Image (cartoon, rainbow, N blue to C red; front, side, top):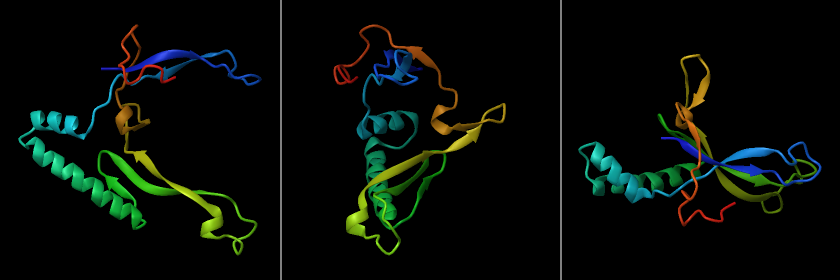
Length: 146
């Protein structure tokens, strides 16, 4: 199991990156909640329908809690919170919600652990390997995604 990548040459002009080659991670498919529930069902004694019910409720509860200004931490997974996209104001007195808050986004911070050398590693990156994408291995959903 590896993260697949494709080489890409930077086409920007007048930057230190111009003309250099970089790797870009390439997803070769998508797995949805039902697919995850199928895998979880095979790996434990819980039925897919039970897993689906829990995941669907988890999404609703997380949404409610984040909208109540709470950070949601899933142990072993990471934490989620709502962040704000803002435009600066001349002063605190001049700041208004309608004029300065332009939008919101969800911030995900993966759980971190330590590797054998004592370095901090994000949960989903622990032990990951990279491999160049073999020719013609991109799914139809991902073609032309560059």
